[in-house]
Each structure stands twice: as C-alpha cells, then as structure tokens.
Length: 371
Image (tube, rainbow, N blue to C red; front, side, top):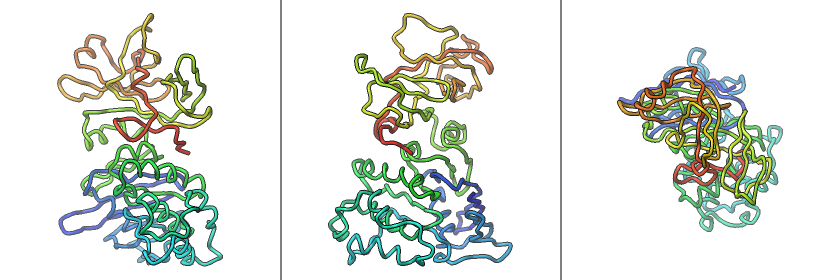
C-alpha cells in the first residue's frame, strides 16, 4: 500500500494531498492544469521537501515530518519519467538504458534489459542516438531507463503531453502493459480524461492543490465532485468488459460485463480480450417497461440508485444494471415517469454510442488490451 499525506506552501499556493494507493496497477493523479499534481509527485520523489506529512511505500517510510525522516532521492528506489524523456544526447539508446541500470546495485536489480527492450519494442533502436528518435520512441526509451533502475514505485509526469495523437496512440499500449509485466505501482499524472479512461485503475482527483476524492476509476468519474471540476456537459459511464463473441453476418461484437452483455458494431478484437467501454449519459434512455419491436440493440434491466440535478431542466439518473450506468434526461421526463430511487426501469443504449476505439470524440479504448 502507498500511503501519502503531504502539505507544502509554495508562495500563495498551498498543497494538501492525502490518499492511499494499491501496490499494483496505475493510479492516476488527475486534475486541471495548476492543480498541484506535479508538486505532489516531486515531493514523493524527494525533489522538493514537504512542510509536513508522510510518504510510505510498501511499509518503507520515505518521509515523516513527525519522526524527522527524509530520505534523499537516490535512496527512495523511485523511477521518474518526465514529459520530454530527458535522454542523454551523447549516448545511444543502449547507453541510456544501461545508465539507469548501473545506478542500482546488482543485488537489488530485478528487471533485466532484455525484458524491457522486448516489452517496449525498441530492439531496432538500440544503436541510435536520441536525435534520430521520434517523440514516441524517446518516451519509450525514457520509460525503459526508469524501469532498469528496478524501482519500487514509478512516477510518470504527463508522459504523453508533448506527443501528437499518433505518437500517444503508439505509447499508450506499452504503458498499459507495465503493471502486469513488472508488478510496480505507478502514479500517473495527467489532465487528460482519455488517458485516465484507457490506463487508470484508480484515480485521485486534484483541484486547487487539494486531493478531492480518490478511489476506483469507474466510480470516481461518476461522482459529483468529478463533474464539478470538469463540468457536467458530457457525463458518461465506464465499464470493463471482455470480448465474448463476434457475429460477422450481423456485423456485431458481443461484450460480456458484470451481469450484463452489450452489442457493438463489429470490432477487430480477439475473443477473450479485455476492453473498456465509455457510454455517454445522453445516449441512454429510460423506459418503465421492456420495449418491444424497437431497433435499439442494448436494453438492460435495472433499478435507480440516485438522481443528481444538473440544472433546472436536466438530471442525471444513476442506474444499477449490473454496473453503474448514467442516463441524462430532462426534468420533465423525470417527473412524468416518476423516476426515484429504488424504481425498476429499463435502460436503452444505442449500439453506435458504445464505442471501442481511439482517443478522440469520446471513444474509449479497445482492442489495445488494458491489462
């Protein structure tokens, strides 16, 4: 378990962050620009000193103001990946990678260069210098160099921020493979909703220097606090599913989720592959009875868990259909149908509004396995 509680004043800006994270997976430190995300991981890395609090990684205390503990950065066993890679220009890719490895005593190394090179797909780059690498290739090498220090925690500070969409799509699958391949917890700083949806297992929401909420990613993104920070214009739900079957004659793919299945337009995915799906609240309708003779492919039975008022004319209805699903309806529809907590209803989802795709236009990953 990672246990982080930090306070630091930076001029007029006060950082107060407190959260816990699992020893596995990716925890996204998420919030708008200027929220204090980078300040937090710099304190975790030992690059700046908190005014108070503690940092504990797997029962190892890195900082504790009450007990006077403050390990220097080189003693923390933390890998740090910056936005721009920061490779040594005079070294080849191989030289950059082995530089990181040499920083760790041989007895403490648990990650090998062949394993890293193979996972990141950089075999063909080993003899090149950074000037001959693309932005995406530089980031992969930077990730490899950090991994070869055999860290107990990996910090990633908006590693995709300087890349265009094509290069982001190139790097994201490699980042998604890291937790399972190396069993290293990752704190991933970003202000991109798409990166959170594609990569994060857990989310810590930061705003104005404070950690607002923390928890499992699908739950956090539906919380009112999340919507307050990022606006309520486009609420959505996220569900993890598995590719169950393909019906090529009908042009459909069947996804199996927790207690529910969904049909999508035919996807180029392998059966059994895990995927994440985003469903826009505005693409979910509610019926009191199961409709018949209707073109909508996805009709899920469930009950109402809550109703959140958006404004005078709109509400978000939280449905339990085997997973939590948001439906945005008018206040008039809510009153006409008497939508209230506990009521049994049917959710109607257009198959075209459930997407497995890339990082654009509210389409969520899939067919790049997310672990």
